[in-house]
Length: 448
Image (cartoon, rainbow, N blue to C red):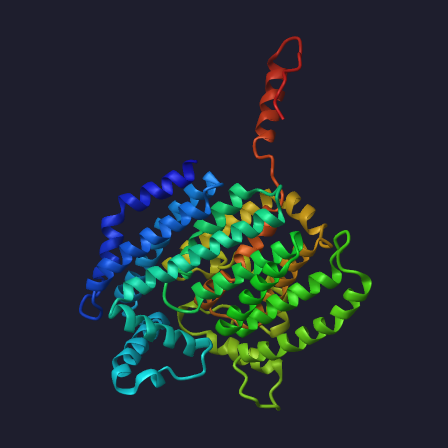
């Protein structure tokens, strides 16, 4: 289709520029020799994998191939912006620098250089150190590998959507989940964002299979997704686990599925998940174990801490108001919050999403009325928990845009769960005009 062809053409036409940005943004600080070999190999392996896994879906194959190139472009742009515009002041470059330090000490210390804990930030440090041992000083390679991991997550989100909503608008959802600029840009670099996207996608895919065809493989996929999310960002794993449990409790059981006794058994699990979520939310707001400090005070502290630079918003706004405004985080920044070119680009995307939600408001309402559908309730619960948690704690635009991509594919599923007859309205208007112009007022047949 036209959009896919335009993305592929633009990626190929601009390849001299973004390849230069990828390999030569700062050759003094990182070597490009190894990456000149590893990056093409990674691209070939990824293209072969796409051809294999999409052989029964020509649309997904074309879309994934275009998305592969778009992910490489986004990764190159982020590398260039981080080094040239912001002077290397970004977490992603710190991860690689620490990883190179780990690799340089490996011959002296041995495997003991990979220090625990093996989760969260330290996990990324150790993974970068292991990558540096295998491929040397090849930071662009790890950038591209992260982008391809995000691409794999987009593929799994698409598969989950097709299973959960076989009559949904898979054309639109595929375009959005694989080519939305914010998802491309904020998951295309070394850090936690690409792997957490992948593990959220694994969880959504496993849960969709579990709802459709219960079995050990579906359960295993859910376990892998939750375990991976727990290692990267524990509070997100808690949100996913709570949403899955709640969907079993409030959702309408399938014929021959969960009986009443099993549903009652799940209630303690839901309570335990709620308790776990509260504790992980405390970790999110950087609790240091001060019992005298309430969760509200900690959220206010993190909000104040995040209001730095030119990207702060919600300054002086109380926690209840921030929570009340949390549903609008999907559409921020607002026009009056634009203070940079990046915020302007994000605002354009937000306006597009707002317009799309308005055009599809009837389809969205119809989907939400099916809240007893276990998968719909899972998506709604995860989105609500995410919005409330991050809406109450985050007041920095850059942080919000980066963290928000963990929720966007889930929201896009709700947005595209039902088909919208995009061409029927124009056809009806055309038929009405033709009838008015016809002297006999004859009916003109119009296709469905």
